[in-house]
Length: 201
Image 1: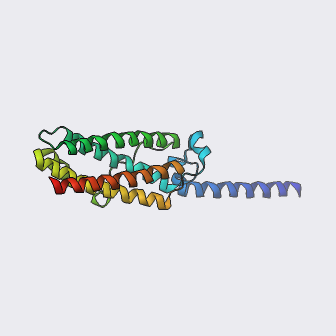
Image 2: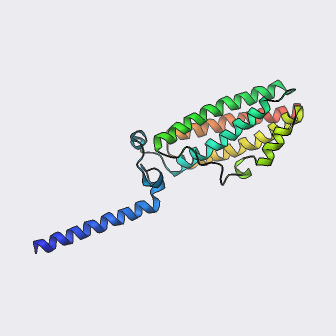
Image 3: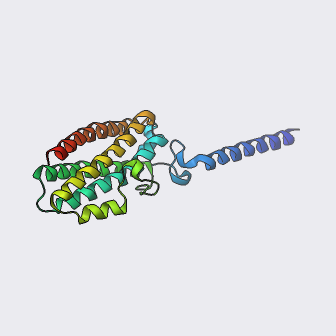
């Protein structure tokens, strides 16, 4: 009877392990404390214990979003005969979002996540510029370039604000939420500045 009991117990334990493994495989990418493909997160990230899917998605998607804003800023900063206020704003955007990219990349590294999600699946609904949009900005000159930059960056900022507001609604990590709040506040203010510049140019 003892042998039968031991066998029954072992079978039950094995079934439980297999069941848990199946659950992990089904959703391991987003399980708390887990990274891509079920890989454990680094100790620093695991200790936080408050990183959810929204935090990860926001961070991974905001990096390429910011990278495009930096690229747009670089394009206008290379132009001549541009209103200095536009150049100052472009430099401000580049500096702020460049620093935020570094911060978010450090979080992904701590979480054991890929460096970024890339731009796949992102488009004008997220405020992203298309290749044609970027080519148009690159080809524009003088005040035309300044005006196009402002119009595109307003749309770009609006997409970032919407993404940040989604994070504020659904995220849990305090650091990520603080960044989302900063993005909403700073980019809302920059939109007002850009709209004013458009009316004055």
